[in-house]
Length: 419
Image 1 (cartoon, rainbow, N blue to C red):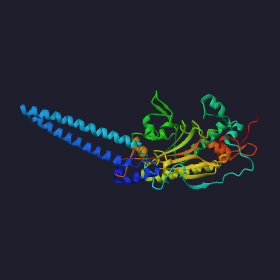
Image 2: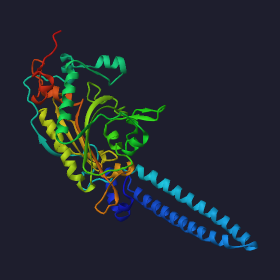
Image 3: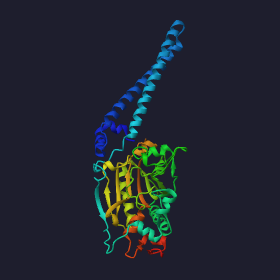
Image 4: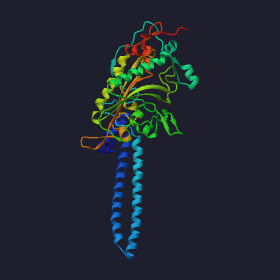
């Protein structure tokens, strides 16, 4: 949720953010109008309530006919107080609803535009030059006995799969490597719940534009998480915390309906309904959030180097940011059979947006309670298997195992099954 005080002081900043996102900038005027009317209604309510208290003392001192007349006036005043309070509450609820629909204010350096308007910040590593026709990850996965889409669909439907044999072991190796790195960097490891209450899902900004992607259990009033960002952001909900920054890393299964993406990446495990992920999450002083964002990106790059993948870093354009993000960097690995870079990690700075909604605060230098900043970043997911298999494949269908993963897998090369 955006800061109303900051909006009053600099409304043009939100207008510029809305324009860059491709959103309606007229919402700024509506917010300011509602805010002014609500504050006016609150003033009227408080003035009338003060008059009511003062008038009540006069009634208590009066006698006879005078008391009866004053009692009648007191009744009218009581009704006016109730009406003024109801109007202030109505305007407050209307303002709160509108505020929750407005995305976070972007950082000034975020590129404007939509999905294709990102800016490439750097390329790391060179895409492999094969002297043979490379196989895609599914063909490799099937020959290695690592991926079974057919039985996944038989049991659960489209976009479900089994990781089998070396495929399951590869995922465990990858995510264990990510957890090990995060713990060595000072993160507190967690296994969070994957079912959360509506206030946690709404507080992180996922019940707006992305609501159609979320699995809901109406009978229990719970949601399945699409990222452990949600339970990690809710971990300190309604708390005042100290000792910032606080960094957590979670391993969880994630669930996404992928609504509206039919026909896209239907082959293999690039875009699926269930996957596992290791996610970094940080609570920090808002003044430190920009530098913390860069730290998360560096940790992601460190992990990508360990699995020896060529990738690029992009600065995501404003119109492609999620509701909560003020800025986001993606690391996209090269996928040889697509001749394209595909997202493997995202690091987002959500500034105070989520913390305002979830009431996560810290004491500032003056001892006042203020919202913290929240940030999140991917450290590994099931999708990484796609890039690992395709980039490290060999002509005979075997796959080179990056050195950092060997201690977990116990092999240097993944060999095709003998049929």
